[in-house]
Structure formats: C-alpha cells, structure tokens
Length: 70
Image (tube, one colour):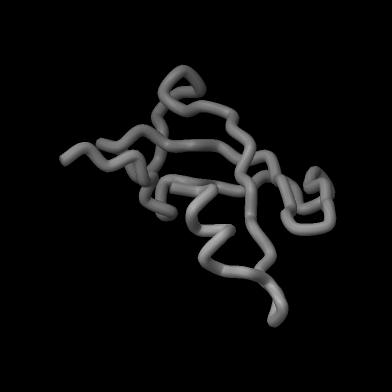
C-alpha cells in the first residue's frame, strides 16, 4: 500500500511571520527535507512547500473534515 503521508520530522517551518490564517486553517511556508537526510547538505536537496494546518473546533464535523483530507 502506498502512503502519501510525510513524516513531520522532515518539515522545517520558516519564519512564523510567513503564515496566513483563514477560518478553518493556517498555511505556513516550510522547507521539506529529503527522506534520506535529517539535514540537507545543499539547497538543491530540500524543497520549499506550503503546510496547511487544519483547525478543528468543538463544533466541527470531524468526519466531514477527515473525509475531505483522505
């Protein structure tokens, strides 16, 4: 079975001032490290990505949110 999940240890958030917030999520710029390295030895070995952090409140329909994310 193929997994599309990214190990969160590979994600290095950039400056907190780069995040944007919406009603149900926050998007932040980050660097994604290669799978085989814990620290890149060059810029070419890492990628700049956007990380979306979902906000799930007390009145959020969790089943609906998880269905959309899978």
